[in-house]
Image (cartoon, rainbow, N blue to C red; front, side):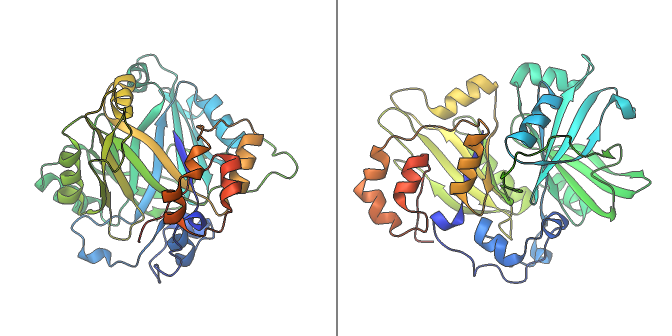
Length: 364
């Protein structure tokens, strides 16, 4: 599931980020520190103080049943741009992979073409979903050494991958379920994505009047874990990756009469990378987290939040392309406690109601 976020419907954090170093993806997208402070809450931070420094997101890698079809969907409906490809035509007999971009967001959509591919088994068990939350780091070897010392499972040792465009240093560690974090240093690489990929542009032509780019940056990725495991994974991100616990929601914070969950949010030093971690809470009926764990057959990434400059126009554009949204009852917008809490927002509440867009605010 994908969630759309817009800073102007909540607190304005435009002044929070100063001259924090930009990632290559952000530079290529034409974003600056002020933009990112407003969009995703970027703060200035010295990575030299971190035992496991993380610059930011590198890519979100999905396993899907039909990579060609999924790539077309994200281009035609979500306005993403195709940048690179790997597949049988270029010697990859295991799977097809399409690399898509929107602003500083990079999706990689992988679909098996070989029945014996590990991706076939993964998709057979879980269906479409995130397999890899890849992170850009300045020193792969140092990160892996620290992670190993803290008890993390290393799935891939640090190694170089090279082609005519240069060399990428990468490794991978395990996180919840069958999800992994690839750790990538591409400072010596100038290719379209990774060795083994070729530059490729899409054939989809946007209709007249369609926005050029709907989404600017990735805000957060939510992980759902089993009952009693939330604190285990919060500790993992604090101990292994040096993240801090920036928020928590327990008890009645996220609960209805019939369903409830508990959540804690961890973030890296500059707040580019944020992971809310959810576990089910005891309630009268099955929690939405329990339902996810049942249908996905284990822990995994529940949803991604994408930041946009104009949530009203973005939702309108997505609906025009056939994207469906979760429904929100009108009573939500009439709640006096909500209206008092959010106060004045730049997007009129009636415009949010018409589009079924949620809105909230806190003291931060």
